[in-house]
Every structure is written in C-alpha cells, then in structure tokens.
Length: 237
Image (tube, rainbow, N blue to C red; front, side, top):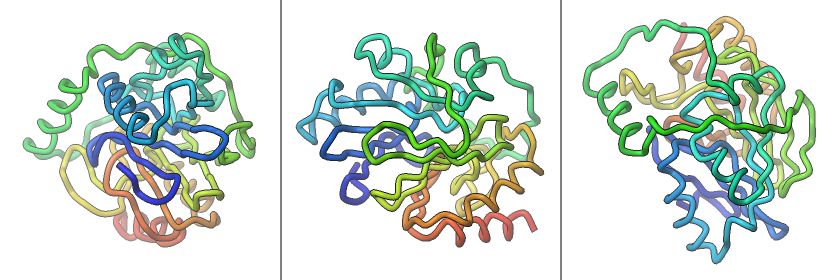
C-alpha cells in the first residue's frame, strides 16, 4: 500500500513492514511475518520491481513478528539483513526474556494471534547471518537510513530515520494500536523488556525531523516525532 511518494507499507494495522522505494533501489524496514512474503511480491510487482531491486533489510529489533521473511530474503536473494548488535542474538535464535502480557481483551488478542497464524507466524526462520549496526550509523542503502538507538522494548531496538522520505520507522518503540487490547492511539507497546528505558528513549525520537512516524503495529502517524512522543507520554500519565 502506497503511503506517500517512495513510501509503501506491507501488512496492516496488526503487523506491518515498510518499503522505501528510491531511484537506486529499495530499502526494506522490518520483515513482518513469513506470510508477508506474498505481500512483498505483490507490492514489488505493482512497482514494476523485483527482489533483486532490494538492496537491504533493516530490522528495528529481533522479535519474531519483525523478522518473518528476513532469512528467506537473505538466503534466496542475497539481501543483507541489518540489526543492532544488542539484538543480533535475538534475531539469530529467538531468545528473549519473558515479559508480562499485562491487560488484554479477548477479541483483539485472538485477532492478533489468528492473524499471526494466517501469516504463518509458526514458521518463522531465524536469521543465520546479520550485519550488526550501532546508534548513529548511516547505512549504505537507498535513502541513506540513519540508525537511532531506542533501547527499551529490547536492548537493540532502533528507530530508522530516512530524511529523504520524511519518515522515521519505530518498530515497537511505541504503538498506535495495542495488539492485545485493540486500543487505538499513540501508547507504549506491549511485550516491552524495560518500559522505563523505553520511555526515556522517546526523547531521542522527539528530536528527529519527519512528517511520518511508522510503527510495526498500528496506523501510520502522519505528524511529527515530537507530537507522537508527547502523545505516548500522555497515554502513560
């Protein structure tokens, strides 16, 4: 789905990944669930592109609902997969601490897990080889994405700032739709390792210049990073 010039979304408000389509190729942000591979092929076809046009995949963190087709893309198309060093082991093995689910509602929770099953979340392949990145890195990919460290949801959570398209991709640093309650609006994401640290990381997001803030779960935010950081803090308060 086209959001803006050069900016496309795979999936929906339950689980999403993104394409940055530039003249020199495509940068992917996150890989959703394994079944999003078909969505990727459809979106590429609509653009008149192929997997060979994808120059790199940047993971906002290493959780299973963000690495879905990453290994397939790396193995079949030779696309490098970038992830923060602190989440590299998570992307390769799936190992992560258990976090409390917190408040939930049966309908939205069932919908989340049902969608994950429909998109073959049970078949996630972990990424055998990754390129490790660090806070502040400018990656050699279309759009020159900048890595912004956003620890909290996981130790290696990042935002990916692409000034060329006026967008910042935030993964699970925040959400605009809580997958377990169905509550809409800017708020902290569930399954967060360290909620306090995630809250502190919002300061780094607020300082960025962009007109789109794009989460891994929820409606795209067409507004400034500062505005959404303020909204998340208000939701906590």
